[in-house]
Length: 261
Image 1 (cartoon, rainbow, N blue to C red):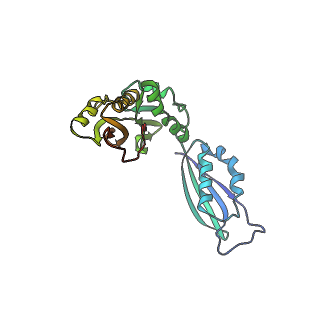
Image 2: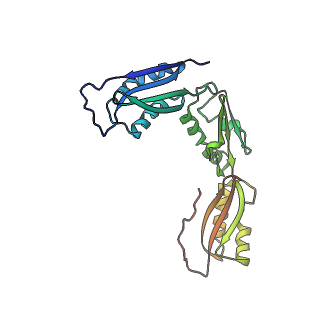
Image 3: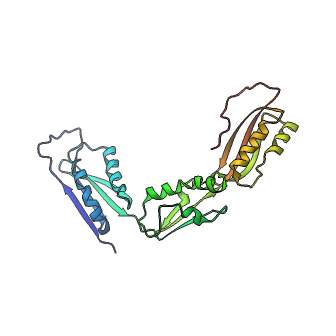
């Protein structure tokens, strides 16, 4: 069982006048695991500098941020209690675990090791959430760079699970869903649909998508074209919406042309 230590930073007001309408910080109590104690001690002057200042939520968040910047702090629980005509701020600080493994789920287009090889987070390190999520944010660019695939991402906090030092990351590889064509019907819509090269259920390759849009734009029956994706995140499906202006109609709407994200 881990032994908890209390690092108590208490300093009196001295000559600072007390204002009845202002709650001031009059003390700190920081409870941490022994392994964190040496990392926390250098922060002591920064906490002491706040003694005598009016309490505010922004001050509290600044304190929490100091702990997080240590790089190995996973959870900071906060509380307050009356102390010397003011408030003592209480912090219970919990350490991040050591990374035992990192596993990717949902990667089918290439080896998960190719993605993990780009990560700066490695097994054996103390888990640093900032570093981990920076690594995760590189995943879309890795897909685009290696395979030209758009819309592969980790989109939700629940896609990242951390248990006993084992990190599991679920990547959602969005596939092509329905193609919705607006502005034209019948034979004109069928022609646009046949020209679109990305088939339902396929990954969306950037070159194939842009080539399709270019080919549609070149059709003699098309005057202009706008497009945008709609994402079904739970199903990892993209509905592509094409808004076509026929060649015999003037442009009656505004939009973003060629949007790729």
